Image (cartoon, rainbow, N blue to C red; front, side):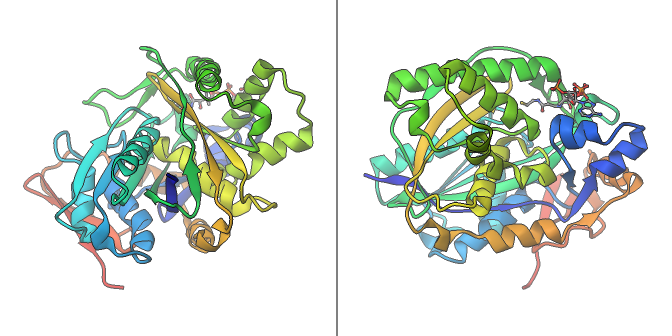
Length: 389
Ligand code: COA
């Protein structure tokens, strides 16, 4: 039975901070960002945007194309949860008017959780082909001001419809996985910003890639040369280059510069300007590859490496379905990115601090230009607004 991603769409916020603006503010050479970490811009969420509104923006165009009453589950992956108890998916379920006969649950393990949700959905459809599952991966990456992580913020949400006979990607059986209890990146419950040991995190990421790959090969007997393109988790775009070089060295492959680019480059176009979106990042990279590849990807095998600090990693593969181009939402992705408004550093800081509120009663100014926004918090209850078209 073929199961996988039938439709995929991502959303990001209406604002960005250019790393040129950032470099000027910090008195740093802009090439550290453009070349050193491979980032040009980062999407910044205003205070009336959160993972619920981002995911509603991501999912709505998918639901417009199907009978949404047939959705059987919402599996919501995030590490930017808005409530310690209620799942973000339940808020989303209400905003999108999904059927009551539906299961909703939140998944967490740093940037890995989106893959966990996708694999769970894959298994559920295999157990019952009637299942039509909405998988969401949504996050807002936030670090302390003046920390090394500040340049690698961003935000985004990806919605994926997982079902039998998918039109975009079939997920192949077998994968390689790896877990190690390490402290490379974490966010205690009392903090709104993450703590990271960036250099150590990069090392753990690359080691996890080698371990997950070894397991993948043992489990599937698939080899490097049988994979046409690679999507890696992207905390910052340059990480793709580090990861692919590491894998090539491990398998002792001979890959020309041109081939290297063909295997990885199209997957970075969006992430370079959206920034890190934690659990969504791998899948925004996948959207980027599908939308920006020069060649027809039909029947090509993709390798996916998912990494969540802390750490859990998985390498899996899938086959792009012929005719997938007809089902892409490229124009929506590109319009969103192009129509974002640039922020000055001061305006960014204003959003940054306002979004940090722990008030139990607050009405947010209107910044979010999308159909869904966080209007207020009243008596500790989050009030979302769905604007008329
Ligand atoms: N021109 C070109 N390259 C430059 C440069 C310039 N003017 N200045 C610096 N660089 C390069 C450095 O040589 C370095 O390259 P390398 O990685 O090949 O060594 C790179 O830019 C980064 O510079 P560095 O001094 O190491 O930056 P930093 O101390 O600010 O740390 C990160 C960068 C990415 C580690 C940091 O932003 C971070 O921790 N981000 C969070 C990472 C994360 O999210 N991890 C968890 C999930 S996987």
